[in-house]
Length: 338
Image 1 (cartoon, rainbow, N blue to C red):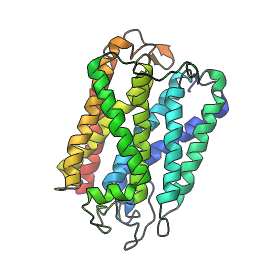
Image 2: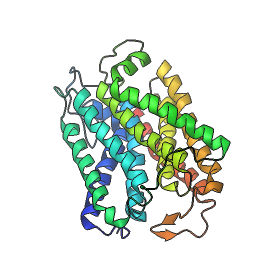
Image 3: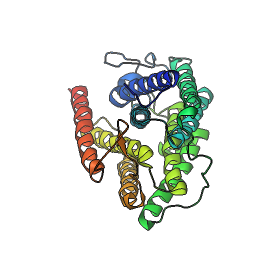
Image 4: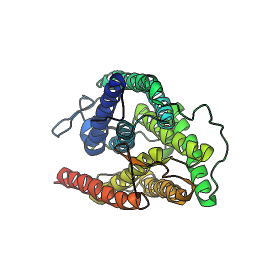
């Protein structure tokens, strides 16, 4: 398994990192409401261990689910690295390290664990350290190939893709950095300066730490888009595939939440989510498919082996992925509303 990675220590680090990310992503995505209510009377793999009536109980379930979808993309990226090999994967790993480091700092800066489990305070830096260790262990396997030749500039020729990526990078940097450094102002703007207390369905106002984690994860995707813009499209399928899958998951989860009544109904935040999520997804996909002629799918592999005909692979894979994710999230919503 994962034969494309030769270093056993690096492989172990990446597998542990992917496994932890997968558990948290699925738990947040599917059981976010139960996670934030301490697992009281419902099923969850992990919980924040908050008791009813405490400051950490019943707050930010939709935002926790959003983080789960973003974590799923990071998990898929790590699995792609394990399956396809390390050569040139600094493009994936350096933004990942920046985002994980920002997440670690954000949790320690903004987290209030007086009434909740402290597990995130320690799990996040451990995963960051493992991911960083894997990066350095993979230097002999070509992880930094092309890094010394990287000279930032606008390297995308297609005007539509250029516009799409520019919007993604500029707005991504603005929102991600604001969420990381001033999460309280983001919360205040989106909830009209109201603090919604903890609720049994998890619809209380999200914590500063939850919003800062969102910003840290968004930063990773923003840096990936920035690399496509400033280095060119050639071979960037390795970072665009996880991005497309993550944003597709966010859109599906958002609209299933609206239909099932598990989302924040009738709020300005809901209206914004209904617009922003699909726009980001469409801009990402538009850039990907427009840049196929500029080498987006160059050297695409499957389990380390070249793909003979990759021309329609993603056009087929995305609908299949959407059906599977939609079925899982939809079934989970049905079970939660019974």
